[in-house]
Image (cartoon, rainbow, N blue to C red; front, side):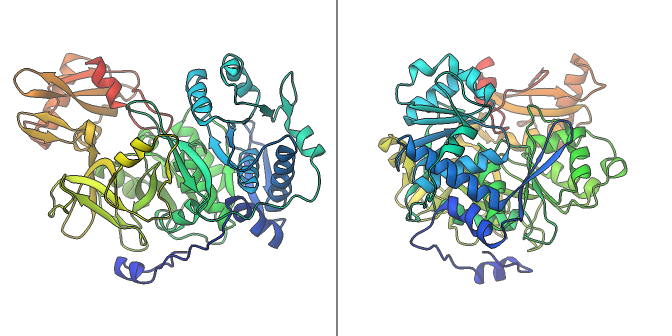
Length: 539
């Protein structure tokens, strides 16, 4: 655990990894507290009608033991993949823990995935089991014949033809199950990358990945646990952000997590939910935070007195949203950076004095992060380069599933290449620039979209924005912006001219968008990141 410290140097000096040889995520998140304090609340489920039901750590332990025993009884063995397609609920934790206790590999699947996305991931992983609900079964119906490796489907909504009922499986499970004594380096979890370019790849992680997340989790959430802490994120727990930035580390520390299945993020509803539930710590992707900015007078309209920290990751936050949180909420956002392959390696933290507008923080203690030139040398101060992370590292993936060449290409020597560009300022803070393939080349300038998008968001009419490069015979590319307007504003040529002038006078003549397209929405991944590639393809 990373101990709180008033400054970054002492934070680093006081930390050292202590990864045991043997470790099992399922035992850690369920059994440690389940045996010590079985009545301690673990998951607080809030239904659509506002009803609240708490699941204890003791119940998580008993449920995961029974599910693991039931899966073993139907022939599931260590190393096999178990798909989990469920909304936020205690059942998600039980399913994950059961997979880990067997020594199998959990395969989280986002509820927003359609049949084709599910088909690809389940087939590529060779999943032997899918644990889902009635909506998941409806998606599976059209593709199950294409999944010969899928031996069993388990539904939390009861048995059906060719489907095992969750309650039936747990009730019939033999007693006396004992979790597998796994090594910390044994495979445990496979999360597919969002696939903004090319087909998604399965990033395979070891049991140690949970322990590797604990220092970054502590920083971004401002050093929990504290008495009364209650965690919540609207992000799907199938995403690394929801699963590893919130759910699993919180349970490791005995901090209860709120489960609230939602299909669409509602900013007014989110503020009301935080107030009604007395939530202390939230994790919100930058896109969600930008949507919250459109809610007028949040502190005057909602009782946010319990809320003490907002954490964020997934894409660049930008100084505008950082400043909004400080002025409107009185909070400093704990921004963090990582990838599915190597998550939570940079973070900001108010308590440690590591927070600066426009920066994603500094390297989390225990992680070696460098901004590199193409030749592998470190960049100078304020020189843009690629973010690279040194191995070994407990949060780093083992490999891409069945893709050894792609795994090898991810590394330059002992440095994992992220494909993300950034610069390091004189004080060691990292400022995200953009994906390497998102950079815009215009009249010999290399332009990152993040700064342009943040400037666009400062205009009172703009709710969401994305900047991409559009091919141009003279300049190679020009900057084109796709803009979603706030309520009360209408698209027009005059407004487009006004927004262009707004950016040109605040950035520079080569960075302002020479074209603006108004949209009702922007294409996004299941993790809330704008898919700029799709916008580039639209031209």
